[in-house]
Image 1 (cartoon, rainbow, N blue to C red):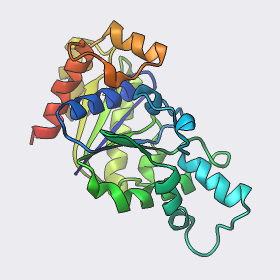
Image 2: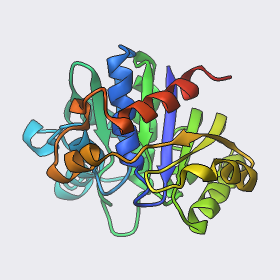
Image 3: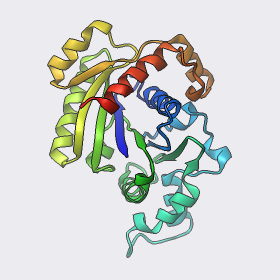
Image 4: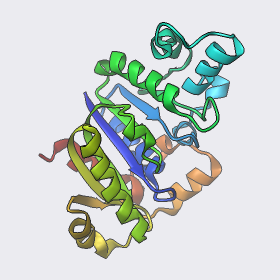
Length: 255
C-alpha cells in the first residue's frame, strides 16, 4: 500500500492531478484505490463523477455534526473519533468498482477541524491496508498536515504555480513535515498547468527537492472540469492525462 498526498496553492490544479492520477492507476489496474478529500471545497468527488448526496454518503464533518450536535451526544469519555468510526465505514465511505472515496467535508464547528481530522486519522489507520494506493487531496493550508492525519506517507507532491508564493508554500510544507515528524519517503514537486515549461531547474534549485515534470495544459480537461464531467472518462490521448501518467510512473517506480 502506498500513500500519496497532493497539496498546493489554490488554482494550481492539484485536485485535477489527483483525479487524473486515479484515472491512470485504474487504467493500469493498480486497484483498489482509496481517495481521501480533505479539502473543504470538496471538488474531488465531482471530478471523479461522484455525487455524495445522491449516493447517500455523508462527509465526516456531517457524521460528527449528527452524532454530537443534532443527536445531543457528548464528546466526553470514549474519544469521539473512536465512537463514530463504525458510522464512517457504514455511511461515510463511497464504494465503487475501481475506487472508494472519503471526504472530510466543511468545518463541523466554526473555525475548527480538530475533531474531523482526529476521526479521519483514526479511520485511516484501521482500513488503509486493504488498498493498493491511498490518494489524499490536501488543501493549500497546512493545518491537516500539522495534525498528522497520515503519520506515514510514501510521497508528498506539492504542485507549484507561476508565483513566488508557490515556492514559499513548498518550503513551508517541507519544513513542517520535518518539524512534526511525519514519516515521508519522498517529498517532490511538479508544475501545475500554468507553470512555465522551462522553470523545472529553477524549481529544483529554489526548493532543493526533486522536480518530476509538469501537468500539460489541456483544453479538453478544462472543458470536463467546467461541465462537471468525470475526469475518469478523459481519453487516453489527453495531453494532461499522458503527462500525469509519466509523473505517476516516476512517483511509483523511482527510488
